[in-house]
Length: 520
Image (cartoon, rainbow, N blue to C red; front, side, top):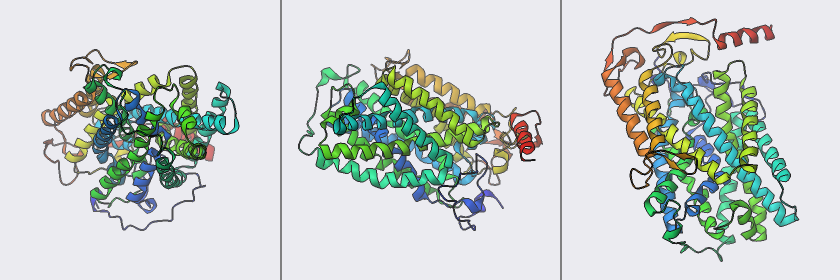
């Protein structure tokens, strides 16, 4: 039976308890264990975005000097464009039974898919750090407001450590616990954010406008585009992770429902985004937005912000960290999913301390989100085109050869690398960085080519699409990678896949031998 012939009606087993440690790594999820629905994909996206991390990104348009309504338009544009680019990324998991990094092996090679693992690491560190930073700062600010506890680097470090450790605990338990946390965050934080309408009704001014002299990049359009790109980093950040969750959805789930869940999840993120835009006008000019917001809030809402901060830190942190633990347990097979998760979480926590207590938070966030947009978007564009040309058909077994310490199969290409997709991504990422303008750290030499308007996204997308499609036409892929219905709108060439053989020298094979000896 082909992959496409299997349906969502296959018998299922009850999902594990949330306190049961997940056993799956990036291996294929069995049909019987795919018990999630598109609604869960919506919940986990909205829950992961319905937090102070998203609020912080929502403050950037105001911090860059836009008026309230200009900031609203930049936010709407960033969310809309980002959601449209992200939408196809939720389709891979149900078709392949694994995460997006491993799924990308069909198009960049089973070894080349480490690019996706690198992008997920970059995103995980950035958004895990942002979530712990801003959630911790909100709690510190509230403690100062409510109990007179003085702010200090030691206090912030302790609060950061508490939130960071709780995130790691949730992620160690795995998908079901993370899904539970995000279900709570969807409802609770939405209510709490909407209460801001009552809290700030007497102080908020929709006419806020600092004037053209405050534009961060000197003119309206360069500043407006930069603001939209920073907002767009939030939906783009989900690109490497959607498959982590959608792999638990049955294969026969319709494309329309999967795409709809992603679009609705990202559209709902406008709630925390617009909260950030609106409240940033109230504390404009303050060095620390979060502490300034706590001080500007009515006392009862300062208490509410503690709950929002705590739930938000857990939900964003878990959605970011979970996928990276999965990826690196396969790239470095000597580590289990739990060990990889703890290791990456510890590394990210050290980055939090250094970035928050030593360097400028605004500059660090700006640089990271810029790098995420510029490097991840071309990768997503290539995967979306490839999904279309391959008709969404994948061989689950052959996607896993690298993870099992094997060579060969449909997606081995040349030494495990499909240079068509990999070179297209690499060139597009470099071109995007050359045009980028995310001061003060990520600033490309061609940033002023269009009068200061950031062309990194457009140049990256166009380069990736043109190079990848050209490669598919000039150097057709072998027909066996396309499945029984053949390619769509691109040619193919005859070929025979290399037989799958065990690579006893591989790290995965050696790790399997060590585990067998341990169990024996």
